[in-house]
Amino acid sequence: MKENKPELILADVDANPDSAYIWHWKTEHHFPFHTHQKGQLTYVEGGAAFLYTRDKTYFLPARHYMWVPAGVEHYFQHRYPANFVRTIYFFMDEDDQNDPFYTQTGIYPVGNLLLEMILYTEKWDGGHVYPGSKGYRFVKAIKNILPDISSVPLPITLPTTENPRMQPVLRYIQENLSEPLTLESVGHAFNYSERTLTRLFRATMDISFFQYLKLARMIKAMGYLLETEKTISEIAWDTGYNSVSAFSNTFYKLVGKRPTDFQP
View 1: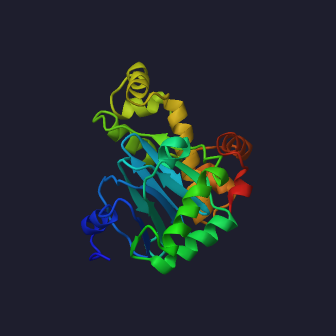
View 2: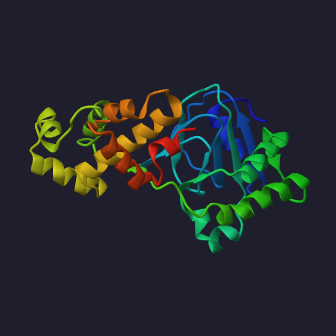
Protein backbone atom coordinates (compact mmCIF):
# COMPACT_ATOMS: atom_id res chain seq x y z
CA MET A 1 0.00 0.00 0.00
CA LYS A 2 1.14 3.54 -0.73
CA GLU A 3 2.23 5.92 2.01
CA ASN A 4 -0.81 6.98 3.98
CA LYS A 5 -1.27 10.34 2.25
CA PRO A 6 -4.54 11.25 0.49
CA GLU A 7 -3.00 12.08 -2.89
CA LEU A 8 -0.98 8.86 -2.96
CA ILE A 9 -3.92 6.73 -1.86
CA LEU A 10 -6.15 8.22 -4.56
CA ALA A 11 -3.49 7.59 -7.21
CA ASP A 12 -2.99 4.01 -6.03
CA VAL A 13 -6.73 3.24 -6.29
CA ASP A 14 -6.71 3.88 -10.04
CA ALA A 15 -3.20 2.56 -10.73
CA ASN A 16 -4.62 -0.64 -12.23
CA PRO A 17 -8.03 -0.25 -13.89
CA ASP A 18 -8.66 -4.01 -13.98
CA SER A 19 -8.26 -4.58 -10.25
CA ALA A 20 -10.42 -4.03 -7.20
CA TYR A 21 -8.91 -1.99 -4.39
CA ILE A 22 -9.69 -2.70 -0.73
CA TRP A 23 -9.20 -0.11 1.97
CA HIS A 24 -10.28 -0.39 5.61
CA TRP A 25 -9.07 2.43 7.84
CA LYS A 26 -9.63 3.80 11.31
CA THR A 27 -8.29 7.32 11.03
CA GLU A 28 -9.63 10.54 9.57
CA HIS A 29 -8.45 11.46 6.10
CA HIS A 30 -9.16 14.84 4.60
CA PHE A 31 -9.63 14.39 0.88
CA PRO A 32 -10.42 17.22 -1.51
CA PHE A 33 -13.04 16.83 -4.21
CA HIS A 34 -11.85 13.95 -6.38
CA THR A 35 -12.98 11.26 -8.79
CA HIS A 36 -12.15 7.60 -9.37
CA GLN A 37 -12.10 5.46 -12.46
CA LYS A 38 -13.79 2.80 -10.31
CA GLY A 39 -17.15 2.45 -8.64
CA GLN A 40 -16.94 2.92 -4.87
CA LEU A 41 -18.77 1.21 -2.01
CA THR A 42 -18.18 2.83 1.39
CA TYR A 43 -19.52 1.56 4.71
CA VAL A 44 -18.92 3.46 7.96
CA GLU A 45 -18.96 1.02 10.83
CA GLY A 46 -20.72 2.27 13.94
CA GLY A 47 -21.19 5.86 12.89
CA ALA A 48 -22.42 8.33 10.34
CA ALA A 49 -20.84 10.33 7.56
CA PHE A 50 -21.64 12.87 4.87
CA LEU A 51 -20.82 12.58 1.20
CA TYR A 52 -20.56 15.80 -0.77
CA THR A 53 -20.87 16.07 -4.52
CA ARG A 54 -20.89 19.30 -6.47
CA ASP A 55 -24.68 19.53 -6.36
CA LYS A 56 -25.86 17.42 -3.41
CA THR A 57 -25.12 16.47 0.19
CA TYR A 58 -25.81 12.85 1.19
CA PHE A 59 -26.22 11.68 4.77
CA LEU A 60 -24.81 8.19 5.33
CA PRO A 61 -26.31 6.74 8.53
CA ALA A 62 -25.28 3.62 10.41
CA ARG A 63 -25.99 0.25 8.75
CA HIS A 64 -26.08 1.85 5.30
CA TYR A 65 -23.53 2.00 2.52
CA MET A 66 -22.84 4.58 -0.13
CA TRP A 67 -22.45 3.75 -3.80
CA VAL A 68 -20.48 6.32 -5.80
CA PRO A 69 -20.26 5.64 -9.54
CA ALA A 70 -16.99 6.01 -11.42
CA GLY A 71 -16.37 9.59 -12.47
CA VAL A 72 -18.54 11.30 -9.84
CA GLU A 73 -16.64 14.12 -8.13
CA HIS A 74 -17.03 13.84 -4.37
CA TYR A 75 -15.50 13.75 -0.92
CA PHE A 76 -16.50 12.15 2.39
CA GLN A 77 -16.65 13.75 5.81
CA HIS A 78 -16.60 11.22 8.63
CA ARG A 79 -17.96 12.14 12.04
CA TYR A 80 -15.79 9.93 14.26
CA PRO A 81 -12.17 9.20 13.33
CA ALA A 82 -12.11 6.14 15.62
CA ASN A 83 -14.74 4.33 13.54
CA PHE A 84 -13.79 1.94 10.78
CA VAL A 85 -14.46 3.14 7.27
CA ARG A 86 -14.58 0.18 4.90
CA THR A 87 -14.28 0.89 1.18
CA ILE A 88 -14.17 -1.30 -1.92
CA TYR A 89 -13.26 0.28 -5.25
CA PHE A 90 -14.65 -1.91 -8.01
CA PHE A 91 -13.19 -2.43 -11.48
CA MET A 92 -15.40 -1.33 -14.34
CA ASP A 93 -16.88 -3.87 -16.74
CA GLU A 94 -19.91 -4.30 -18.98
CA ASP A 95 -22.18 -4.54 -15.90
CA ASP A 96 -21.68 -0.83 -15.35
CA GLN A 97 -23.40 -0.06 -18.64
CA ASN A 98 -26.11 -2.72 -18.51
CA ASP A 99 -27.53 -1.98 -15.06
CA PRO A 100 -28.57 1.56 -14.06
CA PHE A 101 -27.70 0.82 -10.42
CA TYR A 102 -23.98 1.26 -11.14
CA THR A 103 -24.44 4.72 -12.69
CA GLN A 104 -26.46 6.30 -9.86
CA THR A 105 -25.17 7.69 -6.57
CA GLY A 106 -27.20 6.28 -3.70
CA ILE A 107 -27.40 5.18 -0.07
CA TYR A 108 -28.73 1.71 0.71
CA PRO A 109 -29.31 -0.47 3.80
CA VAL A 110 -26.66 -3.03 4.70
CA GLY A 111 -28.15 -6.42 5.51
CA ASN A 112 -26.36 -9.20 7.36
CA LEU A 113 -25.17 -10.93 4.19
CA LEU A 114 -23.58 -7.84 2.68
CA LEU A 115 -22.09 -6.81 6.02
CA GLU A 116 -20.34 -10.15 6.43
CA MET A 117 -19.02 -9.96 2.87
CA ILE A 118 -17.69 -6.43 3.41
CA LEU A 119 -15.98 -7.48 6.64
CA TYR A 120 -14.45 -10.51 4.93
CA THR A 121 -12.64 -8.28 2.43
CA GLU A 122 -10.45 -6.96 5.24
CA LYS A 123 -8.09 -9.87 4.54
CA TRP A 124 -7.07 -7.98 1.36
CA ASP A 125 -6.88 -4.60 3.09
CA GLY A 126 -4.50 -2.03 1.69
CA GLY A 127 -4.06 -3.15 -1.85
CA HIS A 128 -5.23 -4.42 -5.21
CA VAL A 129 -7.14 -7.62 -5.87
CA TYR A 130 -6.31 -8.80 -9.38
CA PRO A 131 -8.28 -10.78 -11.97
CA GLY A 132 -7.90 -14.53 -11.65
CA SER A 133 -7.42 -14.50 -7.88
CA LYS A 134 -9.83 -15.84 -5.26
CA GLY A 135 -10.18 -12.36 -3.84
CA TYR A 136 -11.19 -10.99 -7.22
CA ARG A 137 -13.91 -13.60 -7.62
CA PHE A 138 -15.20 -12.81 -4.13
CA VAL A 139 -15.26 -9.06 -4.74
CA LYS A 140 -16.94 -9.55 -8.10
CA ALA A 141 -19.65 -11.55 -6.32
CA ILE A 142 -20.27 -8.57 -4.03
CA LYS A 143 -20.56 -6.24 -7.01
CA ASN A 144 -22.92 -8.60 -8.83
CA ILE A 145 -25.42 -8.86 -5.97
CA LEU A 146 -25.62 -5.13 -5.20
CA PRO A 147 -28.44 -4.31 -7.66
CA ASP A 148 -30.55 -7.20 -6.32
CA ILE A 149 -30.18 -6.38 -2.62
CA SER A 150 -30.16 -2.57 -2.98
CA SER A 151 -33.44 -1.74 -4.66
CA VAL A 152 -34.62 1.00 -2.27
CA PRO A 153 -32.21 3.90 -1.70
CA LEU A 154 -32.49 6.24 1.27
CA PRO A 155 -34.74 8.99 -0.11
CA ILE A 156 -33.18 12.07 1.46
CA THR A 157 -30.48 14.12 -0.25
CA LEU A 158 -29.84 17.80 0.26
CA PRO A 159 -29.14 19.95 -2.81
CA THR A 160 -26.34 22.47 -2.63
CA THR A 161 -24.80 25.10 -4.86
CA GLU A 162 -21.54 26.94 -5.43
CA ASN A 163 -23.42 30.17 -6.09
CA PRO A 164 -21.63 32.82 -3.95
CA ARG A 165 -24.89 34.55 -3.02
CA MET A 166 -26.46 31.33 -1.78
CA GLN A 167 -23.61 29.68 0.10
CA PRO A 168 -23.79 32.02 3.15
CA VAL A 169 -27.58 31.64 3.17
CA LEU A 170 -27.30 27.86 3.31
CA ARG A 171 -24.70 28.07 6.09
CA TYR A 172 -26.99 30.37 8.05
CA ILE A 173 -29.90 27.93 7.71
CA GLN A 174 -27.74 24.97 8.77
CA GLU A 175 -26.50 26.84 11.84
CA ASN A 176 -30.01 27.92 12.91
CA LEU A 177 -32.21 24.89 12.26
CA SER A 178 -33.66 25.04 15.77
CA GLU A 179 -35.00 28.54 15.13
CA PRO A 180 -38.40 29.37 13.57
CA LEU A 181 -36.85 30.18 10.20
CA THR A 182 -39.02 31.85 7.54
CA LEU A 183 -38.40 33.42 4.16
CA GLU A 184 -38.83 36.78 5.84
CA SER A 185 -36.38 36.16 8.70
CA VAL A 186 -33.67 34.59 6.51
CA GLY A 187 -34.11 37.23 3.82
CA HIS A 188 -33.84 39.97 6.44
CA ALA A 189 -30.53 38.50 7.67
CA PHE A 190 -29.06 39.00 4.18
CA ASN A 191 -31.06 42.02 3.05
CA TYR A 192 -32.99 39.97 0.47
CA SER A 193 -36.68 40.33 -0.18
CA GLU A 194 -38.83 37.21 0.10
CA ARG A 195 -39.30 37.26 -3.67
CA THR A 196 -35.55 37.49 -4.32
CA LEU A 197 -34.75 34.65 -1.92
CA THR A 198 -37.48 32.47 -3.44
CA ARG A 199 -36.06 33.05 -6.91
CA LEU A 200 -32.51 32.30 -5.74
CA PHE A 201 -33.52 28.91 -4.33
CA ARG A 202 -35.40 27.98 -7.50
CA ALA A 203 -32.75 29.25 -9.88
CA THR A 204 -29.69 27.76 -8.17
CA MET A 205 -31.01 24.47 -6.72
CA ASP A 206 -34.45 23.89 -8.28
CA ILE A 207 -36.04 23.59 -4.84
CA SER A 208 -38.14 25.88 -2.69
CA PHE A 209 -36.90 27.47 0.52
CA PHE A 210 -39.38 25.43 2.56
CA GLN A 211 -38.46 22.15 0.86
CA TYR A 212 -34.79 22.81 1.56
CA LEU A 213 -35.50 23.70 5.18
CA LYS A 214 -37.53 20.53 5.69
CA LEU A 215 -34.82 18.30 4.20
CA ALA A 216 -32.07 20.01 6.19
CA ARG A 217 -34.01 19.52 9.42
CA MET A 218 -34.65 15.83 8.71
CA ILE A 219 -30.98 15.16 7.94
CA LYS A 220 -30.05 16.92 11.18
CA ALA A 221 -32.63 14.81 13.01
CA MET A 222 -31.20 11.57 11.58
CA GLY A 223 -27.81 12.55 12.91
CA TYR A 224 -29.26 13.25 16.37
CA LEU A 225 -31.13 9.92 16.37
CA LEU A 226 -28.01 7.93 15.56
CA GLU A 227 -25.37 9.85 17.46
CA THR A 228 -26.96 11.21 20.65
CA GLU A 229 -29.12 10.16 23.56
CA LYS A 230 -31.62 12.96 22.94
CA THR A 231 -35.30 12.12 23.29
CA ILE A 232 -37.63 12.43 20.32
CA SER A 233 -39.16 15.57 21.81
CA GLU A 234 -35.71 17.12 22.31
CA ILE A 235 -34.77 16.33 18.72
CA ALA A 236 -38.03 17.80 17.47
CA TRP A 237 -37.35 21.00 19.41
CA ASP A 238 -33.70 21.14 18.28
CA THR A 239 -34.74 20.89 14.63
CA GLY A 240 -37.32 23.65 14.78
CA TYR A 241 -40.53 21.72 15.53
CA ASN A 242 -42.87 22.71 18.35
CA SER A 243 -44.94 19.56 17.89
CA VAL A 244 -43.57 16.02 18.25
CA SER A 245 -46.38 14.66 16.09
CA ALA A 246 -45.62 17.13 13.29
CA PHE A 247 -41.94 16.22 13.48
CA SER A 248 -42.69 12.48 13.50
CA ASN A 249 -45.12 12.73 10.58
CA THR A 250 -42.68 14.76 8.47
CA PHE A 251 -39.87 12.33 9.26
CA TYR A 252 -42.03 9.37 8.26
CA LYS A 253 -43.07 10.95 4.96
CA LEU A 254 -39.47 11.64 3.96
CA VAL A 255 -37.57 8.69 5.45
CA GLY A 256 -40.23 5.97 5.42
CA LYS A 257 -39.76 5.21 9.12
CA ARG A 258 -40.85 6.75 12.39
CA PRO A 259 -38.04 8.40 14.37
CA THR A 260 -38.31 5.70 17.04
CA ASP A 261 -37.80 3.00 14.38
CA PHE A 262 -34.78 4.80 12.93
CA GLN A 263 -32.88 4.81 16.22
CA PRO A 264 -30.29 2.01 16.62
